[in-house]
Length: 252
View 1 (cartoon, rainbow, N blue to C red):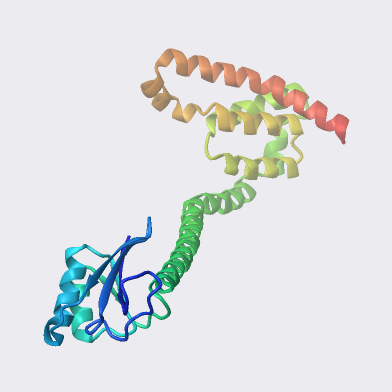
View 2: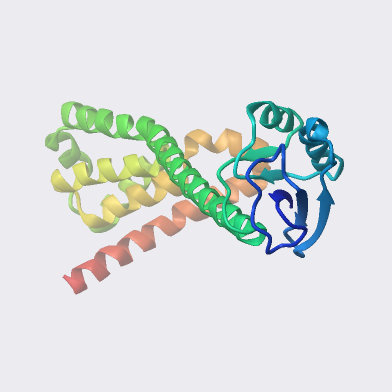
């Protein structure tokens, strides 16, 4: 970055001059290396202000610092993409250090603000994404309690561990859907007295089998892969469910 400073003397330790338009020198500093060029102002007071601005623009400075910059000169600098900063004080070196430190502080504040806004945007996006799932959960709870009675479940799930597991796997395979919804139905099955093995098989196949989505899987991945994967997932659901029920029983 290049910064031009209105100075009394042609050095980095020179005090700042009072006004940009009447300064004795314009000290142009490369902030990366602190190398500088001191440009004397013309002796003619009437042309001094314009000459100082032209000198700054010719050297492609990014910022001009001075104790005071007239509105006319400030507008000219800003129209050419140069930041005009009034109220600078101290020496040339001190004014540049103060400007850079303020710039870092403002950049850090902007970055912190951007991070907060980004986090809020992500949170809102996640909430919006979850709304359909949450709505589906509420709907499933109502439908399950309304249409699935304990008598109906008792007629299907007889209490036989292996048969209940097989029925759970069959129902889960047909009624494939969102994994969260399977937990809702699984809780309803447990509350209705269905064994843990049958519920586990239901959840396993609900998530991993999914006959309703088999045609799409066939078209995307091929019939051989889709059918073998589905059969393997269904076959594994039964031993996995039985083992889960046994382990939970031993632990509890």
